[in-house]
Image 1 (cartoon, rainbow, N blue to C red):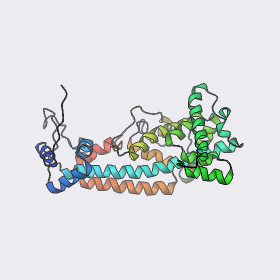
Image 2 (image 1 turned 30 degrees about the vertical axis):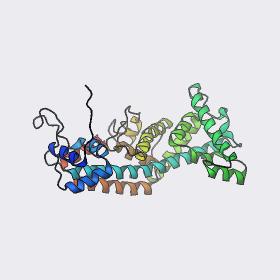
Image 3 (image 1 turned 90 degrees about the horizontal axis):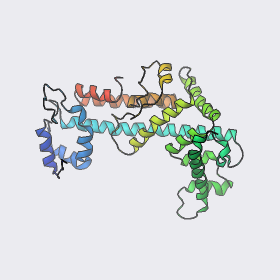
Image 4 (image 1 turned 135 degrees about the vertical axis):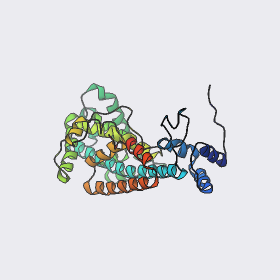
Length: 319
């Protein structure tokens, strides 16, 4: 039998929460928050760490909050996750810019003739990549054609560049590809280029930290982790407890970094934070780490210890 959820006023929503054991110290403030943030996004999205799961205290496993849980605790986690999304998105955009730059540079270095990226022979000879290769070539060709429109141009920068230089190179077009498209581009270029780009990341990391080797397939895996985090960060989805539905293979990196097996492969927040260290400049990563530590410290002081422990486990820090 399908359960139909009926409309409830903010006052009724607060009453429902109180019946389930949630302490609402300031009902007027809670009502203002619910009017701004939406009950579903706030409560349904962030209640999980605060629910009583102990069968001795909640034998029928009905939705009940752990004793002492306050409305402000759920709102604190909600605010934390929002700031975490903004923080991660900023760093993921830097990684996105970094890999676009490296791909455009290395491809253009190897194939120097004009519009070389439109030549299918310059990509992987593996037939399993042909369909995606053709999609990439078509996307790049369409971006170039966009300069011919004089009205309602989607990317005026491409038209302006063409007007000045009479062609549009890959290092310009790469800026207008999505992370998904640049991920696919990296997949379908030839193996020599893929390994050269992976080495570029490894060399930069080794200069600022300690020596490490990166393989193309490990960059593939990092991109597979980064892609959903970039999308979720940009689209206001619950982030702190996200993990990949299907683990990626990062066993070699885990061993190189002295981490437990599976600690990166599951694609938790902790995984993403660790992997960013491999693809960002050290000074940028240091600032990011300090800000993340500040957010975690504020959350720890705003909620109960038991809930904080659950959240840290969800984020992958207990793995």
